Length: 387
Image 1 (cartoon, rainbow, N blue to C red):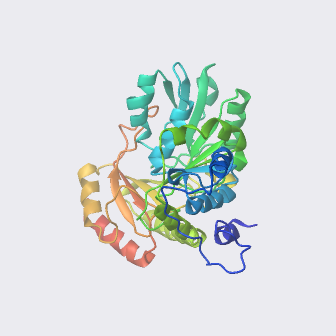
Image 2 (cartoon, rainbow, N blue to C red; image 1 turned 180 degrees about the horizontal axis):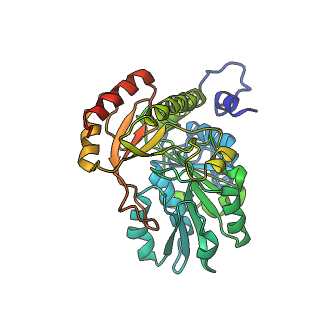
Image 3 (cartoon, rainbow, N blue to C red; image 1 turned 90 degrees about the horizontal axis):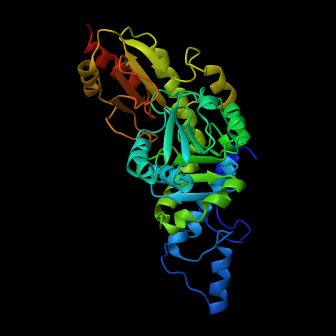
């Protein structure tokens, strides 16, 4: 079944029923009732391996349908929902954390992951090294006590590309699991488990929801690593509202249409940006000039709506701020993946890479507006800072 068809036909409840609604039922529940003690004990046992009702915090049928859909899309064994994407990433890290363990994290990981490392992992005695953003130094950084590799590709803000099959082959030769933040592709333009990755993390807040009205994270795992993962989220009480699960399910029905529309518009905006003398560098993986472009084109089915520009020499951060403030159709906001266009002045957080002499940078999310309007808006903003 093609991914486009999976989005429409999977995660819709019991499709064998004689009469049913198009969408799965929204089930809100904290307490689940059982007809007798034996049934209660039966389901307490079943929940260890199956998606069954046992207690509201462990999911309702609405949550289960979303888990089924994302598992089908990503080719995973099981999925776990979390209240935010950052919570999902934190749980992956904490699940493998122990005193004297060693983690490798690629430099272009989502910025707040560094805060988790500082506030929790350092105190637990976990040793952390940051790889180059493209993980090209992986072999020299692995240690006997390396327990996890966490990467992001394309990377945060600058969209650095990792050769995932190569990375996984090296990691698995040392019996090290590989996790990826797959929010950029959101299970649609890239299925990392097919390339050897063990754990895929997606901020459903972004493209899966698609409407900027939900926060959620999802972890999709293969069978081997699920056996190591399924207990800690329950022990720490992580849960997700069935209302939010319903909204993400609804958003995912149009994921194919929206992702392709974001990509088409981003392509048109990039073509325009290439004509502007105010820009030194355009970061967009589909450009042939983008580092590891050929790997991106080999592994990905498309690009999303994210573009970052680096201004040319002679432009400073104040110019970048003035440029963004002059934009009319691009709002200022920290997230992305909704229907609206965004622009923010940003500094990519990096540990293994020195970007102190680079920038200023502006990150765009290209929404679903008419690109003629967006280009006109960008033009007047660029004109306002002409040197």
